[in-house]
Image (cartoon, rainbow, N blue to C red; front, side, top):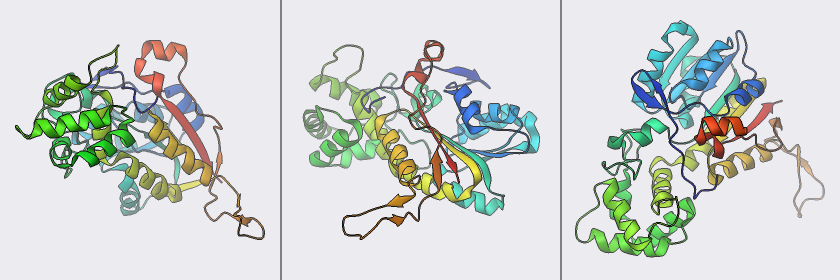
Length: 320
């Protein structure tokens, strides 16, 4: 999925709430190889679908999420697994600290499923979607310091242009940013539909994709520091993997996938060379060999059942 595409809101019911179905589940189980007694980290717990499958395969699972609603719902769903499942409320970028505090042995597998859940998209009070009117929030962690409204109402025009171009790949970034700055002089933006309406007034809908899609994506990524935290998580979690342990990451747009692809490539290269060196040198960050040379994508059958899976890409590396 490119940064310009939206995430289909395919959902499943769980504990009275709505969460997305776990994507690429068969591939995750095949490549992550859970089994009896193995210790797995699900760094993006969400609705608990991936964690449940890992538990069913016999693994012990630590599930992390910064969203208290996700933690509560998954704790209820997976309570029958007792001490084999431990939910922890924290951001996956801070997982290393949480694991150190728990004093656990090295992990046999790590899974990150990056992106916003359908529950968050469908809950108007969270402010992620232009399909529902709600506060212009977009925080995955409701205690986070910055909302989308803060960015929209305080960034100058140049900063907004840069934000929408770099994190949303929005070709109309300049026109949209100018409209936002002019509109907010009348009153600050407070709701999702106010912002979506301002965008649509200068960038009319063409086809199925709503003109606010890329702007909302850019704001969500910025509010939650998604790309920075993904890089931090990859760096901090790699040392927690046991030899032979596998790191699996599912992404949904090109910006995230680029981060994962670059990290795995850098850390699976045994030798590095530079023009100024007399000869190649061993790479001190050589930790992995690639399990997937190309990303794994969903089958036509899964895409038909769960449209959200169309844009999913799975990359896996094994600690040597």
